[in-house]
Each structure stands twice: as structure tokens, then as C-alpha cells.
Length: 298
Image 1 (cartoon, rainbow, N blue to C red):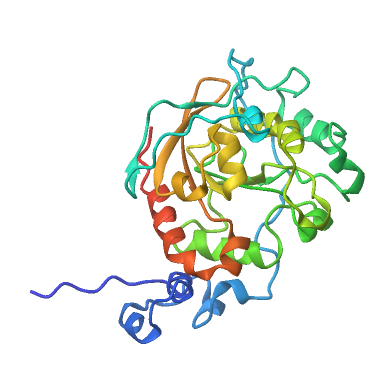
Image 2 (cartoon, rainbow, N blue to C red):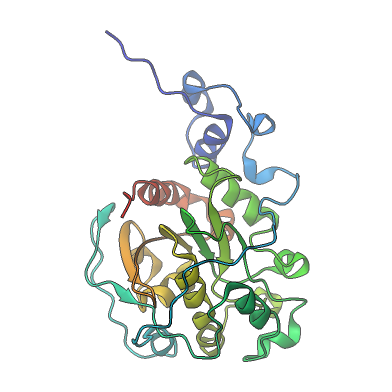
């Protein structure tokens, strides 16, 4: 008895075409367009619709606890000291030893969600505040979301509207997530390692990363996400306390320990802005997305 071919939505079809799958070969898997009929037959990253990441007023996350003792290795690694990254494992292999410690933000980082947001909005710890229109705190679900998506730094569009992942990279990110069933209404929180845009979209400096990393650590502790999807080398290195290349960090499941003691699964992959410039990496990104989706409940 011949089994029925699986049906793919229009968004999944578009993403698979983006990573090089032949359109004619995919035709027999096509399902109805579902909630994204406008995406049928063209890559979602080329849409010109409303911004993919919408900003709703966040509500405070419950259950925040005092910081647990621990040391952050990432700032030292990014400043040029030797990291402790392990050797890369086979693609898809789960790695759970030891969990990277992302604990102990400075006492200045508030332990209340809304207070943290206000604190970041007025932060002047590094020089990036002088060139920003506004800090980009993040947006999305704040009560133990299924996904926390962490990029590197706000771009020009993000700085202007105050929301992460705007413009073409945001549209591609939306299509990437939708291709694995993570839709706009899903429980996702979007943010960046750096909260203020570096002028000219330059690479953030080590001291700027060290200034912003405690804010991201506190967001992780308050949100308690089920999994973290990290986009780009800098964010992956900072959260994992490693100086390894992205190619060594992607393709497997890492675990980090938040300041409140939660062990959180983390998968690193390419930033969508990088994929727009280097589309040959889209197939690898597809594997990373499916690896993140496969993470079982704790």
C-alpha cells in the first residue's frame, strides 16, 4: 500500500524553494495555503507587508528570583581571552555537558520585567546610547515562552520603530519560523544581544557586548523560555561563553544555566541577514531549525 505524501503549507513550500528545492519536485506535496495564501509561489522574504514582528505591550513575568552565584565568562572571552569551547560534535547531536553558566548579572539590572524595560530604555553604560533613536528591548510572549529568539544587534529599521527583526531579515526570519510551524501567534519572545544599534550596523565592540549581556541574562531568567534560538556568531559566543566559530557551535543542542538555575536548551544558527547575503547556508539553517523544534519538554 502506497503511503500518502506529506502535505506542506505555502510558507513551508516557499522556504524550501529558498534553500534550493526544485519547485516542480515540491508540487506534489503542496497543501492549501492556510493562513498565508499570499506567500504561495514566492519566497516570504520578498513580501512587502506589515512588519513580521509585532510589538504588544509586555506583561510582567512572574516568579523572578534573586540572582544565583556564578561568573560570566563571555565578556572575558569576547575581550580576547581564551574560551573553553568543546570540539564540535556531529550534526544533530545533543550536547549537555557542562551547561554554560549565564548567571550573575550586576545588581543594577532590575529583577522586575517592566523595571528592566525602563532601565534599558534609559541605559547609558556604553557609548551606543549616543547614536540610538531608542533602545530595542524586545517583544513577544513573556510567560515561559516556547521560543526565545536572540539576534545580535538592532538594525536601522529596528532602531526607528523600537522592535527587533524588521525589514528583509525579519521577513525571512518569519518565513523560517513558519516553515517549522512557529507562527505569528505562537509563544515566542524576540530580542537581541545588543539593545542599541551600532551606527552603520558595524560589529559591536567587546565592551558593548559586556555592557548589554547582563540585560539579556536577566531577560532569560525572568522569561524562563523552553528553548533559545540564537542567530549569529556574536550572540552564540556571548551566551555560551565561547570563542568558537559559528560552524563549530551550530548543528547541535547546547544547554545554558540561567541565574535562577534553569537548564535551558540552546541552538545556534545563521542570522537571517547573513542568509540574505549567503543563501548557500539556508539548507544548514533549515537543519538547525528542525533540531530546535525537536527539543523535548524538560
